[in-house]
Amino acid sequence: MLSAAVASSDTATSGFLRACLQQTGLVNSVVDWTFSDRSEWSVRTGEPIPDVVLIGLSAGSEPCFTLAAQLRRLRPTVQIIASSPQKQLDPQLLLQAMRSGVQEFLPAPVNPTDLQKILSRFLQEREPGSPARVEKLILAMGSKGGVGTSTVILNLGVQLVRMTKKRVVLLDFARPFGHISLLLDLQPKFSLRDAVGNLDRMDGHFFSGLLTKHKTGLQILAGISQPDGWQRISAATLERVVNVAQSTYDFVLMDYGSVYSPEWSSTLCQARMILLVAEANVPSLWALERHMSMLLGLGCNPERIRVVINRWNREDEETLESVQKNFKQPIFARLPNDFRQVSEAINRGTPFFKNHHNPLVTQIQKLAGQLAGIAVPAPVQRNGLISLFSFRKTQ
Image (cartoon, rainbow, N blue to C red; front, side, top):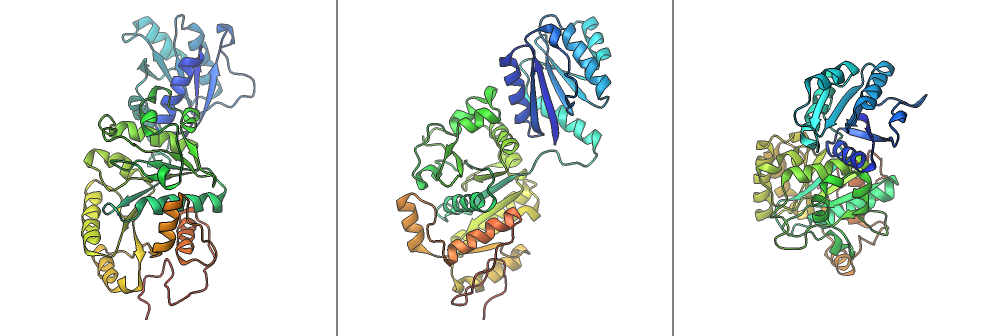
């Protein structure tokens, strides 16, 4: 990940360039250098020089080039990128820019995809083999509709907030409709549709303003609520929203539903972990196997795909033994069947409310601890219930 700064003579341009940087998913901090007076285009004494500086050129570019030259003297390895409203730069101006230390030019308005390519190349040159982006995304996908994916991921988010005290956001990308807000009895003012419709302003501050905060501390980007809502949303726009979320929050969870196609592979494969939620019945496990094959075919890392069995009963173990054999990996988590608690929570619009030695809540807490790297004390075993990460059949 890179530190970055934007330098511009006006706040609108500065804000747009900052949004473009955050949408690449390759920067972890962006500093604004907005200069109202051209004579002020210089770095203040003692101010740290970031890895990347994106300069918005305007009429009279001399102060910009002076700043670039100063940055190069203070930190020779800095990557300086200039954005110019001129599609064809004057050769003399281009020569002057290169001499001052500018390494790359992008036409205005900057395309975040083009900027991402430049930053990716810079990262690879600086640290060969280094990861191209931050990995905070934990994505939950159902083997089919109705297996409880939304319920699992929202309660996982609540437990992550409670256990880590960090900033956790849940993106509701389920199709055709998102149900997270409904399950938490929220009335969001904004949704995913507002996010993808304002990409030119999409930085961490703007993104945070679109979220709805639940009383538990979990923050929600509400999903699509209209039948035609997904028709004008592309995979590239979703990826840029995810990148901004990852640059702003400590944990990024996503309800992905159970519907996707190959063009969504970039979002899927950038996830730190994909939780495939299924039930131990024939239709769900049949679909699970096909989802697994599809994800591997899209290039997703098999070590990042984890199977979560929801509504688990002890009688399911014989079936799950064959599943583990076929997938050549253990079941990652078994979430006990608790129809009454789940039903009451859904109807009340709340997360799970039984927290004292409740098997289902205990397993959700263990799963959250595993994802956060926090050890959770094992509860007393009751009625022979197997622990979350024990994969042997109980006798």
